[in-house]
Length: 233
Image 1 (spheres, rainbow, N blue to C red):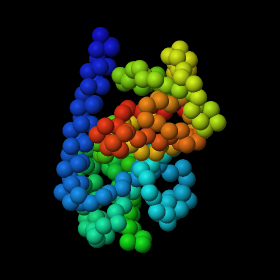
Image 2 (spheres, rainbow, N blue to C red):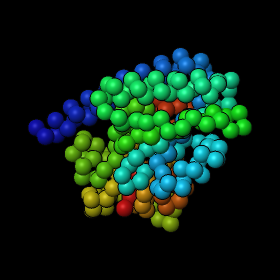
Image 3 (cartoon, rainbow, N blue to C red):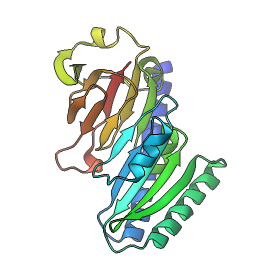
Image 4 (cartoon, rainbow, N blue to C red):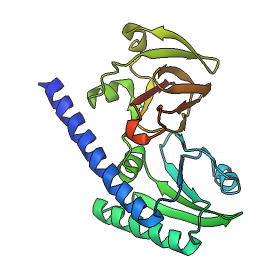
């Protein structure tokens, strides 16, 4: 009975994420009108990193987790969109989202322009809030809690040592310590965890260092992104 309930919860979550993705695509398509948009989701470890990021030009989507799982998002475009138009759009969407949630889960931090690129920096109070707002399936917790939420870890995993992929690991090895932390996400991006990666799902992943994994499907579309598991301590 418990397995059936977990499966139902997982299907309901996936359906919710699918509907949310469609809504976000419609909104962004209407506003950006087919412009190339780079969405960068960043969780910052300490305050000074916020300032350094705002002074840099981000070229890829990155999601970095800290212990409290607060998420910062940057949206940038080099096209002919004014800073004021982007700010108005961001404020409108965030206000609507928070009103539906009946609490402040998302905050607009800053809208900044540098060298013709407009950045929108947004704060989420959790991975769940990021997932609900962005439309990308995402989960953060322990292996044990992920299994309770319906994730089955049935994909192929490899070990990670010294920032490099190693050999395929069996299920017994993988599950030997279900207190290990895991980030599960369905998105093409770069992910940085707050710890040392032990195992990672093998499909479409590249290990960059001991805390960083990049994912990319063949057509580079998030519609075809696979569910990625990053297990760390």
